[in-house]
Image (cartoon, rainbow, N blue to C red):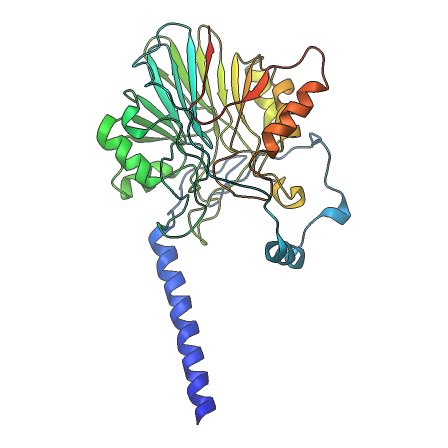
Length: 359
């Protein structure tokens, strides 16, 4: 009898867990996008651009993962040193930056305040303590936001690269929408999701779709190599992208979250060079697992050259511990790569709160 009682308890616990997962999944998942089939959409799910462009340092067959290798890695993983970092914030940003001057302030992770042509743009904003659907669990900040939320200037436009929690943070978006009523540009399928969460002002963009803002600025969604998901059941049901900010003084590229892939050449064909670029350099180890979706510092360095970037700032590192690379490993590797070339490429990183000015 005792055995049957224990068995019943186990069954009830398992069923309760499965039911909780199903209910939770239903509450947080995206319904996805419905539209015409394309070269990167099969009618239900999106995929990255296919092509035979060689990728740098291919993963050897013996280095590739599998189910059991992935499980073993997750049980034994060593994510190196991380610590809490205070912001380098010193003074409130200017309310507007006019003309061709660009002021870009690193808030942390993939969040940047980009000011130019009288327009204030935020990318993938997250001021929350955790990048997670839960306030009590999930990746926690290791760096203070580079600009206090209350010190932000008026925000005109928000660019969201995809729907992962470290890039599309609902709490932050709700605060920004309430305070500034900005235009929110998102990849296909995400506008309806934000509206369902009572966040207004979002507009879906397909790859290569553009919109002009004011007289001197145009924003275009461009391809990237990544994936999307808010829950277990909605993987790749919404699109992901990067953005090009076109101005008469030169173009700016925000890559969002991406691996290196054939899209790089396609962007270069349309935009021969960039005045300023923001490329991801973190969450890349182990490479046998992360390479399909996250660029390493070496791959970002190659993107800098392939896209003819005059000046590049590394992003997507040092804030949330998402992979096995340590907090300082990505910028340290960038410094090593710069030392190998003459003249030295203009590729650097910023601490949260620091700015770069391009005149």
